[in-house]
Length: 354
Image (tube, rainbow, N blue to C red; front, side, top):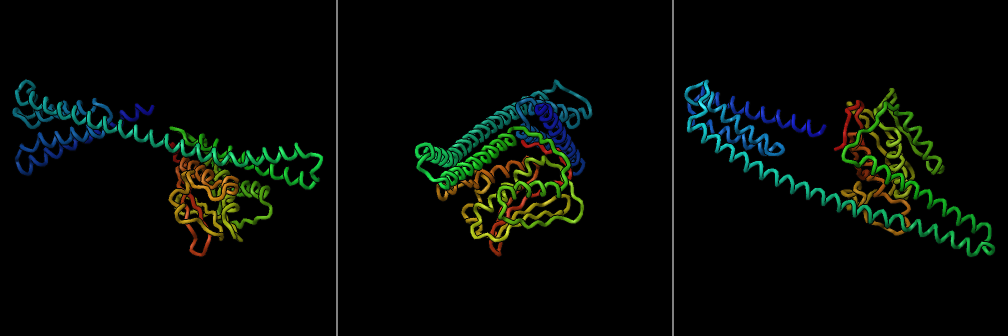
């Protein structure tokens, strides 16, 4: 299906370029009465077609059609074909050579760009794998250590110590579950072609579902809500969008040191719904802002960073929002704290992530 669409685009582009060249030559001929620039304009058109289409076919086809156009409209006898004239044959040879050389160079450049892009993707996958391996190792080591202590000293440890170790194991296990969910979400929305099963979701129902989950994990953290008064429905895959908002709220809990207030806001502007998660904590280091959504952030302290890995969670958020056709940004608030903002279209544009 994609190849067919590409062929249609290339064909339309070739037709537009050749029609444009034909029209320009007619105008020049009418205004100045000169024919000297006619072949050059068609050669330029053939080069444009060869550069901006796939393969050799369209460039060669454009060169043949250009020869026919010059022969028919701009060579004596006018408005009639004379395909055996030496001028026609030589022009065809020249344009075929131009088309072949241009298509060859363009194809080589595209291949080099593709190889470079694939190498960059492999490098990023490797970096992400190393980051994930580091983040998984610490909680797994903690779980193993706590279990070993309880097994080796089961009769000697007081009940309070057992409970404390079990609480640590549960906390690490819960973090591992969230990390696995994040990684599965990345693989789900980061394919070559992804079509999300969007459904109209009421904004208030979405935020209620997120807050129920958030309060279950963080009962002592209050979230201040600000929503539009009017009824708002947005096409989205609700479970993935809940994951985005949960990740943003959890990041504030884990990373916004000194935070007293946490806000979840939504408002409508034009044909978009904007979501904001803000806090009044310590803010984001300026050197981290450019790489915040790449999943490649350096660790701070080994245990704290692994338990609340902001980089992985935010890369999940970015991938999900891009798959929905939106965009996410982050900044530091002038009054202190961090602000994460993303938007979604209120109408389903059938966005497919390429």
